[in-house]
Length: 104
Image: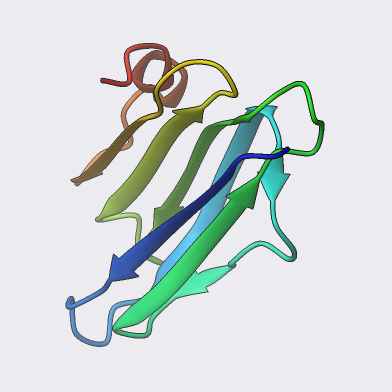
């Protein structure tokens, strides 16, 4: 038994690409290779548990080349309790750990 989370990103910001900025996982991780660049209109980010006793939980963030825009995805998809997810786009990077700890 495992948990899997797919986030479909629809990127409509024109030619501005979002570049991978960082990640942190309390449990699980990327299904395969991480997505290093979001520049297409539609892309899927796939995460999964790596153990049968833990779900997938953590955050990833992206930024434009000039760091003028950021995108943070924070999620918790445990085995025994309901999943939680939030995404934030802003001009400055929030405290990702605090955001993850307070994921709705």
